[in-house]
Image (cartoon, rainbow, N blue to C red):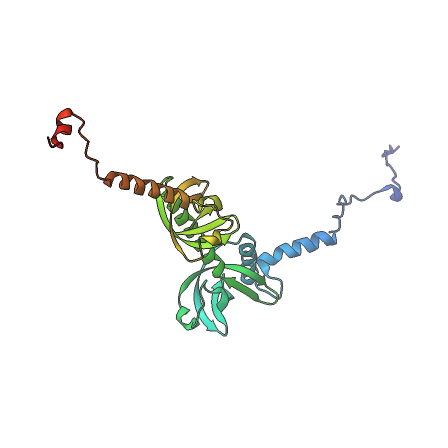
Length: 265
């Protein structure tokens, strides 16, 4: 007899067979429109924006910062145009009006071609291509600073009790302002104008008159003067000189011999 071998066969249901599939990856969150817009704007500084190239955008960004900070910019006058001159800032054509070229009136702008000047940005607009520069304000500031320094030195050299000379600059009800030079002005109070009582400085002084006065105050840059004090000093000196020059009276003898000399016996 043949032996029958029975193999264990496991029947599988095709419906139960599952093919291995790749693991699903979560989809990325969609970009928000505002984020895309911000990224686009930030890219302008590097890629341009379709209308302006990168160099132009960077140049105007610097120019706007110059305007905000008031930075002094060294430039060279590269062209002459009607009512002004041209100078480049970061490669951008800037206009300096003739009225803002100097603190003094400029007759001929042709003399400025090729000259190095210092300017500030006073108006800038990339869309209109408008860039206006000015040198006048810088020169005014430097001139004012120099005058202030000169005045401070001059004031420091004026000592109390010294005698100064000046010109009557203006007359007020309370006194007179005296121009002492180097931007220094002193005040003579009405009580210090004359030894005599006066109701108005105009009784004694007039604008443009040259005077001499004694310094009676120098505090916090304010100079107080006195014409009266100088007048009093001069009067005392004159009186002393008069007394000094009076001839001495000869002494009168009172002895008996002196008396008998004039008698005839």
